[in-house]
Image (cartoon, rainbow, N blue to C red):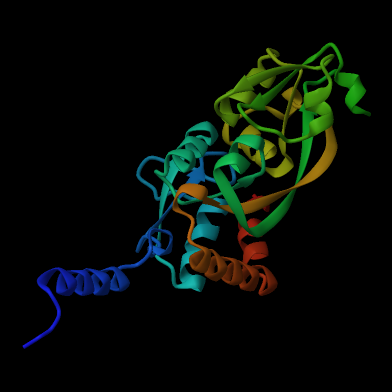
Length: 250
């Protein structure tokens, strides 16, 4: 006959059950990671009756294949996409760093670098950023492309929700210039039917890196390492460059 009391046996059983359960911080990552791609010309595009396309969309698809990690993809404007990461409604996003994004997600892997600059309306000669003082520059809401521009209070800024809206305002003369990734701006001019005579000089400002970000709320270190390794293989093997060329050459 056992010498252990019923209370002692209960404690032993409870202890064994606790050992069998994972710690709260060691829970497995979701079986399918939820990516959100920005609806920005060239990077993430939706057309009626067609699957989403664009550089960031295609990179997510290749990343899932190369890493073996199942990843679903949704589309959203920049502000909404960042809110989804913060709320835990999305796990992954490719984008350019800004304070809001860095507060809610961690960098996992570099994707690619892109040239950022300003396109002015005809008649404005751009030789330096100072040429825009007293003028209005259209930019995507919550974008943080170039700190000297943001910090120059003599340059007025007008925020829009989409790049399509921004380039249309330039064509109509409602803003004096627009800022963004060079290839994305010219792709937007083309798709929105903006005539060449309504597009002025381009001033290159800087190069910005696009990173894969992983939401803090759902972060899993082992999965992040797997994604980072796969992204490095895609970059080193030329897959990322091939995806970029697929769209930029248009």
